[in-house]
Image 1 (cartoon, rainbow, N blue to C red):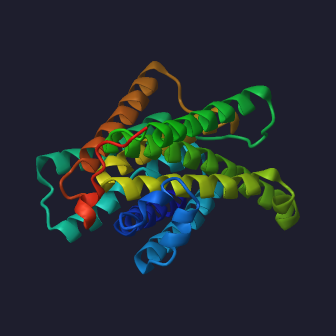
Image 2 (tube, rainbow, N blue to C red):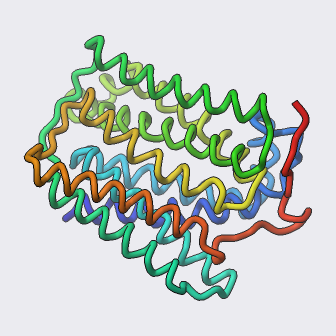
Image 3 (spheres, rainbow, N blue to C red):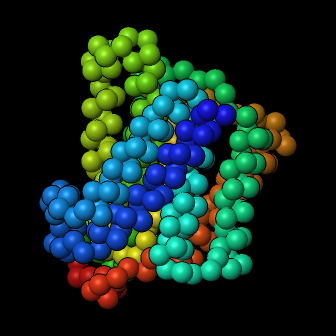
Length: 297
């Protein structure tokens, strides 16, 4: 129960923080797209700083949750950040939930419950180093960088651009969560010395900066509904893949359990899409909502 409450607290801070960040990022200069200069411009905006502060709190809460529980349990719970983003967005836009909103809400909540109850995530070790483990990390990171490169080079339709960056950032955050779990184990067994001498801590920082630039560029270029669903769907999938692939987390694999787990993941993704496309999600403001339908190659 402690892990669940910590993960839900992190999800709440993430959802609220994302809304505040997007409200500020849409006013950033276009030439800062996928550049570290974007962060330097955004840090001057109080609303963005508040959103980042909430994200930092979320990272701290999720780090504690990952230290106490399994990543295959924490990641689906973090996906509920969209519920809290929807709550704030609905308050800002005065939009009713309607059938689509309620359907998305119940599908997301029900999918998370079904996956956790059927899968019963448990166990796991953080012994990173085997070739298969590095392969999984390489595939996830390579996919994220490839998607970001496509978004930067092609720069075609605004919705595709934002979705690509959202998926890329979600994949990086999923790997970051896995490495956070490993760092927590190192700290528990060896204290600050083990934590500071491990490469995982520094990889977490690098991944965090890269993902932050991608997220803010997506927020800058398009309305929240075009990027947040992709990010929210990609992060738990990457985290679960890392948890099972190289953290040794285990799920129940009976036929019935696998069916419910698959149905749960499908419900989570469907709920994310329905909530993310809801009219209550901020459409953007100022500069015509940053509409950038076509970009030159």
